[in-house]
Length: 444
View 1 (cartoon, rainbow, N blue to C red):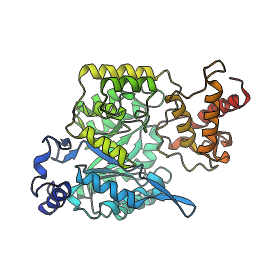
View 2 (view 1 turned 60 degrees about the vertical axis):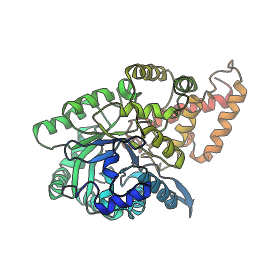
View 3 (view 1 turned 30 degrees about the vertical axis):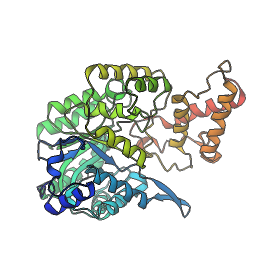
View 4 (view 1 turned 135 degrees about the vertical axis):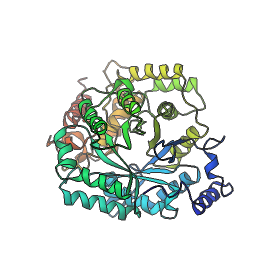
C-alpha cells in the first residue's frame, strides 16, 4: 500500500489549525525557520520529523494495586507533539507490560491516519510459535486502531542465531511479514538491533543476497556508544551506521540518551557542556549528535512528561548539527565516562516483572544516579563520607521496599534473555548488594 499522500487536505487542515497556521501550509514547513526538522525517506518520500515519539516511557499512575498508563496525560502529550510537528510514533506490544499500544491508539484516534507515521514491532520474546506470533501481530492492529503499519520491526534481534531462527525463520514469521508488506498492511519492514557484530553482519548479508529487503533499521546510537560500546554486549554505533549508510538503508535511532543517562551525565561533564552552551540542556548535546548524521531518518525519545517534550522541541526546531570540534569534544566526554562504574542499564523494564519481586531497574537507577551526581560514597577517607553514606542508604530504602532490593535476587537468571544490553543482571545485583553491605558495615 502506497502512502495515500503525506497529508490529505483534511489532515493538513486539522494539523495546521492545531499548530496555529493556515490550512495547506503543512507541506511547506519542513525547512522553514521556527519549524520542526524533517527528514525524507528517499525510498518512498515519507517526510518524517527528526524527533520521534518513543512510547516506551508513557507516564504511569497507581490504580487498583498496580500501575496503569495515565491516559489523560498521554493524550495531552500526543496533542502537543502533533501540534508542534512530531509525526512519528514508535511503540511495541512489549512496552509497559502490554499497555503502550492501546494508549497510543487512543491518543492518536482523533487524527487522520495519514497525518502521522506509526511504528510497532513483532515482540515475540517469550512465546514464538507461529500462532502466538500471529496473535501478537493481529492484536497490534486492534490496539492501534489501524489497518496498516507504516514501519514494522522484528524486535530486539542480534544476540544469537538460535533465538532469531526460532522467532522468525522456523515458524515462518519472516515470510509472513514479507507477504504482509507485499499486501500493503506493512509499508516498511525493518528490525531493531541489539547484539553482536556477527549477527548484524548476517542480517545485512540477508539484505545483500535478496533474501529480505530491509526498508530501514533501528539501532542504538549515541555519542557514548559511537566508539565506546561494551564489546561483549553491543557493537560500536559507528560501525552500524557506516554499514547501513553504505547500503543506503534509512536509520531510526533508539536510546540517544541511554535511558536518560546522557541527560544526567556526571557533574564534571555537565559543567563543561553548560560552559559551552549555557542556554542548551545537557540532553540536547546527545540529540544533536545523532541528528548530525544524514542517514538518520528519525531519533526516538521517550518523553514521559511535558518538560522533556518542550526541551526536545527546542532542540529540533531550527535544528543545529554539531561541527567537527563539537563532535571531538563529545568523544572526549564519552571516553571520560568509561572511568565511572555505572551499570549499563537503559531502564527499559524488559527484565520486569522479576518473578521474585526484585526492582531491577530501580536498583540500577539509584546506584547510577548516585555516581553521576557525585553522591557516591567510595571510601571512609572521603570528604563527607558519613553524609554521603547516609544519603545513599536512606535513598535506597525510600526508593523501594526492602523485599524488592538487591539482596532478594536468587540468581534464577530469568531476566538474562530479556535484557537488550546483555547485562549480567544477577552479577550486577550481587555487586551492588555487596557494596551496600560494605556501607552498612563500614568496611569500604
